[in-house]
Image (tube, rainbow, N blue to C red; front, side, top):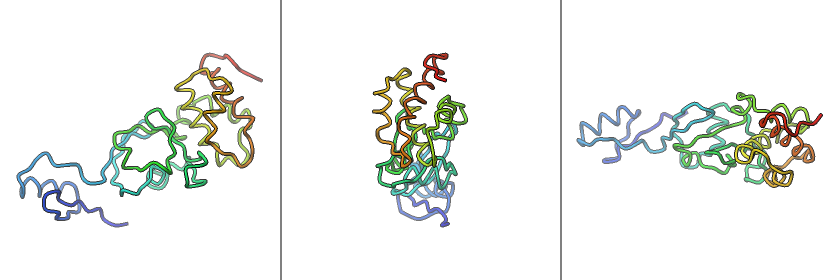
Length: 196
């Protein structure tokens, strides 16, 4: 792992830490406030604030999966075509493999770990209705369904199918998903739509 380099925005001299750079800018250039270091982002993930220095080509998937250890999002296609890496960013489902981490500065991100920690009813209904076989695609489906229910608490089956249309399941569990989402919607509304 390389030591991060913080170049001076005025003279391009490199420094090993943001504090050293700040001291240099104040002493050598008489300038304040110091601009934010290149590539430094701050985002809230599952309710916790994080700061990371990222390269321009670092994806949100790489940041949350490889650097933060949130391994629930899965890399299936790495082309934005399958939905397995879906997370919720500022209330919208996004493909983390196609989202640059640098674009996430100031954003709020929710991963499947956050959905599970909150004990969202989707976790229970997805298990009850056998919405997975290998389970690889399941986190993306659950996160996408949660984003739908946050926006539309009582979706029709057609609306559920449309919302989940970007998520692929190689095991073919598609018929079960609307049942699970409908039941979770009912549980969130106090028991409506429950099925045995």
